[in-house]
Amino acid sequence: MKKTFAKLLLLTSLAATPFIIGGCDKVANSAKNLQSDWVGLDRRIEIYSCMSGKLLKVFEGDVRINPEDTLGTSLLVDGKKVNTNMCYIITEKGTKAQILPQ
Image (tube, rainbow, N blue to C red; front, side, top):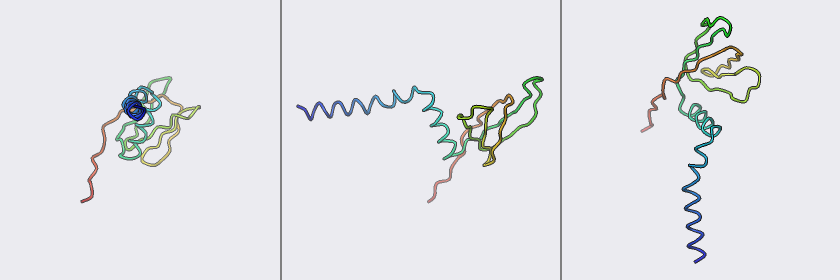
């Protein structure tokens, strides 16, 4: 009886875990960063002047965002760090196809 209850409790816990974790924004962002690190997300970043709205710079490539920054934002674009405190728009183009070794 105790083993059956323990198995039922374990299966219920395992089934509920993705729903509990999946709702958390921080976990979802971490999963997106892991996907960006492992597979590479092709993104386009447009940096604008916050006062005039003029487009200043465009970056395209594999981009990772550092959400831990308190002053401004740091982005890792194709392995190079870009720091900005300007307004920006990030557009995700999709994931890159990986060729599996045979």
